[in-house]
Image (cartoon, rainbow, N blue to C red; front, side, top):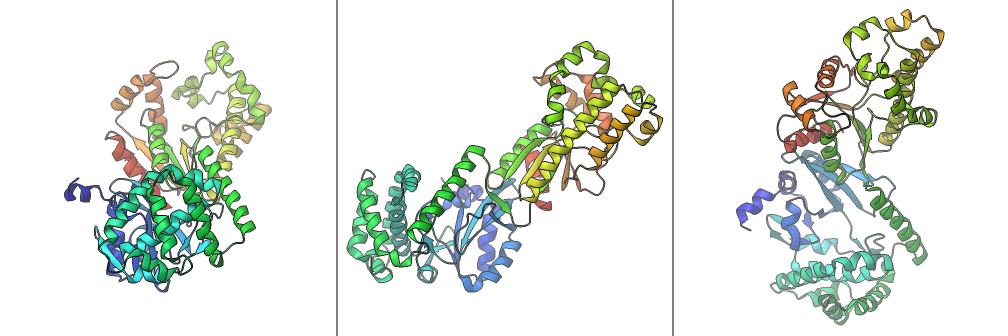
Length: 497
């Protein structure tokens, strides 16, 4: 790959961060996995930087200027003197994850139990690689070898670490080649920084890592390193075991649920995607969840089709039968402008709308709790403040006043109460497209009942009347490529978080 193409693949937000660090004269280095620095600059790998703790406050200002936002684990699964920040590359709509350390802790990836006071050495001896400050290769090699050795102490870490043993061997070879130009050889640096390890054990570790099949040798040497570094442990053996199990449980939970544990320190929020039929709400919601969910805790819901609750579960079983037996009670009938103007509602329709409002309220109140806990909740469709619009209250004050049935009036009042109790979203993204394009898209959708041009036109008129009060509304035209729609949506969400 040419240098020109490498530069083209870089994320602008990452390059800006390193540029701002240099401008502010921050003492830093990208201290791990520099053999894959090109992938890091492209946003394919996490960014790992070590920053002089004396410049921590100044560094926070650089983060803000560079467009990064602080993030933390929802379950408190962080490590000492380490934090996350998430940045958005506005040109691509993709997020990047920044890991910042002020002190060096090592060990298995779950616990990081060993304090290694080598940050001064790493920061004092740097070189430049692809325009980024990185440690002297010999210093980086010493830390890399000890880090890999300490990843061979627990069965959990063995399963995780040895999936990448070929990468470890490749990185070792890359570091050895780079360190061959260093003035002080790596064994001598190890002997000076870690006299309890010594040059001989260090050389044995290097040979064991180079041989991918020597897993039992790496385990034996790893325990020898751990014993010699026992004075630097931050947790007792029992405390480390408990922490490891707890963190592994969080890791498994995340893998099974597909959700990340990170959330922004500034908080989560509810993002509503609304718009007429066939404007790409579900497709855009999927892309939005994919982009944001790469690093952050994201939850998808569908407010247009809320899951049944205890009181609506049994009635919902009879909806398909009711559609066949009572065709005059279909939603399309009540969406007719003339029928709406008459405000002629059957008891069946009023009861059905009350149950639907109940289900929506329960779903969106759960969404509020998730957002309050830091999650970004992406909702396909959302109730408007204007009665009579899609997914909103079906009964205005005139319909309530003109109703002569006590039971229907009570159900209408309950339906209106449910919608009044629904939390407001933090952002509404209104998707639009010319009606001709929407009709053409609807004709290609694989759905029950086939294309329905009349429904597209009805919903088009109803969506024009939506009102979301003081909630910010961003309008996006979806006639362009999906990538452009997703990019605009991610940028809009990022601006309000």
